[in-house]
Image (cartoon, rainbow, N blue to C red; front, side, top):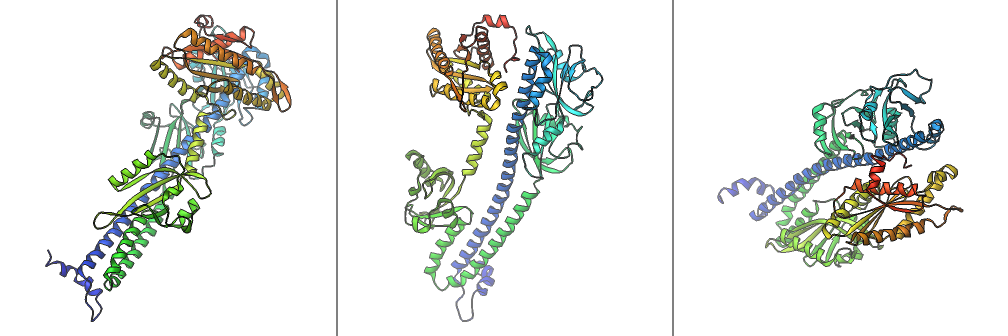
Amino acid sequence: MNRRTPGLLAPIRARFAPSGRQPLPLQLLWLGALLLALIWSTVLWESQRIHQDHLDKFRSELVHLSEVLDVALVRQIESLDNALLFLRAEYLDHPEDINRTIRLLRGGPFRDFEVQVTVIGTDGYPKFTDVPGHPAPAYLGDRAHFRVFADGGPDQLYISDPVMGRLTKRWGLQLARPLLGKDGRFLGVMVIFLPPEQLTRFIQTLNVGTDTIMSVLSARGALISRSVDLEKYRESRMEAAQLAEYQSQRTGYSLRHSILDQVERGIAHRWIDTYPLLLVVSRSPETAHTEIRGLKEVLFLLGGMISLVVIGALWLLSRAIQQHRQDDVELRIAAKAFQTQEGMFVTDENGVILRINSAFTEITGYAAEDIVGKNPRLRSSGRQDAAFYSAMWARIKTTGSWKGEIWNRRKNGEVYPESVTITAVKGADEAVTHYVATMHDISERKAAEEQTHTLAFYDALTQLPNRRLLHDRLQQTMLASMRNGHHGALLFIDLDRFKQLNDTMGHDYGDLLLQQVALRLKECVRQADTVARLGGDEFVVLLEELNPEATVAQEEAIAVGQKILASLNRPYDLNGHAHLSTPSIGATIFCGLQNSREELIKQADLAMYKAKSAGRNTLCFFDPAMLQQDGETTSAGRL
């Protein structure tokens, strides 16, 4: 093997051997070959990382857009559903005033939508419609949005596939709820006709760019709305195999050809938890591929330039072996540095900072004269304890690297989150000579995650937990109650005559009252308890860790209820206007998993209605007899 080596390396040695001088030492040639191999392996590795990172970013953006569309679309549909519930309740109480109620809604929840309202009687014919032009009576008893409730379907919002309206003579969605008598008897169906273009117009306001397509489909695979070319694909329906694949997982991502226009796109899908709707967000990956190609070209150009530098350096290294050894250390440090384009600093084996790059200064505010010669703990925020850092250094010593998130401090004192990678650089004897750290600021990502969490789990007006978060905390409380034997309590609070305040002084004053009620409720409970807003003027208080004895636990819940009554009976200052409001409170206690979340909320709700029928401004506890009295009572009159 040694006899063949000079022959293989002879052309290279001759190239760097000027006349009258000795050729390069064999060791330097091997070093040059090793450095070139290291450079190009780094280039290839970085090329693959760039490719994967951009595709991962492309995927993350689509998944995030589907989450944003989920939150925004649910908010719009909930607004229409709440309006439908309000309209239904008013119609059941005062059918002669339905036109006035519709006009009121057109100035509120309906103001951004071109909708029509129809009431279908039990015979399947319209009893009322505000469709312009006085359309001739048409039989609607065979429509899916009528049959589902006529056949005893549950009282929940039904969203139809797009159909040609027999009254409107237009394509549209039917948002329907049943009309039920106080005895639960089926009286008909109330329907809101919504043109698909209305949802499309709303989706387009999200401003996601021309290369992104957002689609909304029904659970049956029918296209409901599309951010572009809705008219072209109006009657499209997803293939059964594709729909079954999407139904197998609540969320997902794939890179495939669209079933509508056969264009390759990244596709993120997401089923809405609240309504039977499928969201599909797609985008062509061509822009990402273009960026990847551009970065790879720069990377390979950089690799070629560095290779030329290394080859040229071989001749210089032949004149000074000692200098060569020093340069070798620098090249190994540089090779590590090439693996990142983020903020970077290098320390010696004792952790003393030797150098930083410009990105480090931009992120932290520390210039070289501020930080070089000091330990990185100078930037510590104090949020991580000693155990965290011990585990981090144990990982570095074991594997040679560590990657994670750390809260650090800028020069101006601001605490912010960083994504950090620390790599140990070893010498020929495998002893650590330096540490190379790369980092970048992830404040914007953290803020986006926090915003998404807030939109999904908190009420925008009062900042209280919403129905989704309340259900989660109630489930956790029930599980904890099963383990420790302590009781919990659920208090359902409804503001008396809240509608009168909205009708006389406007929704702005109603919102002020709801915000002040939220503050007072939080003052009445412990920090471990939960105050949530379900919507409208309905609040729920979840009490945890009550006494193991049911009678004592009920007394504790009564004490809190009396405290809430006293607090909410105090006058309110609504922009200089004094206002008095009283609550009606229904309560129930529980222990373990004897009842479901929905049953507990229903029990508290029934007790609240009992409090209203008892004269309002009082507290009533749930009694099983209430279920027999009310039967399968719905929430029709809550607003």
